[in-house]
Length: 327
Image (cartoon, rainbow, N blue to C red):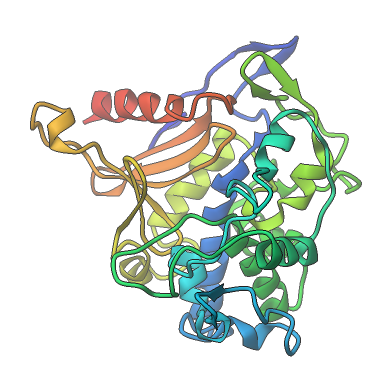
């Protein structure tokens, strides 16, 4: 799905007709919704990005979350550190645990597990080691634990559930009819979504998708995603001046992606493109193959999914072709 004007796609998937309004799981593309909500809360002064995160939780709840070389750095982690992945906190989802296991591997094998933020905090404390001290120069480490904590901070600061925050702060104001926080037992649990794919295998993991919360639980569509990413960059969700806060201080997370403050930058290096200048593509993507990206200076916005967990390069290959064609 590309635009300013949207162009629909059609076809079928396991007998399900697919179009611009077909819902699918965003996975980590959810994080851009979280960023938008956090920045709204910053704008209305409910949150300060420099506030230590321990202030949003019960006393001692987070103690030991970031213990490195015998020192507990937890009290020095700020909201911005979480949003920018500069906290150094361990990643509960894809980081190897002390026993050699990786939580994500169980999920990709179809093991449908329910968990909550208490489980995530405990796992991060007891089974994994942080990567670096919070705010270390030029360092970033992509951690889903950061966004689990941001979900709790949104709820504490706004006084409503994350699901309600998504609805009232983004979906309703933008008229997004097919965007919601997925809940296995929620009011829209029976609404059809494109089945998640890992290679040739179809995954049915509703409890996992519920549990991912603010790091991956939103369902949306190509049409709604296009409206969202356009609104994000055109000042319909928060003041455009705040984009400077978000789209700066880029740090490498995994090649060729960099991370700002709650947002990704995708740009191939010159050595891989015969030194031809490549566009900066800004937005977010997820392990499911869902993505929202923009080249705002040219008014180009792209939204969609390849719905494939087994090949993380697929959405970026599509993005390059689509955006190059429109430039």
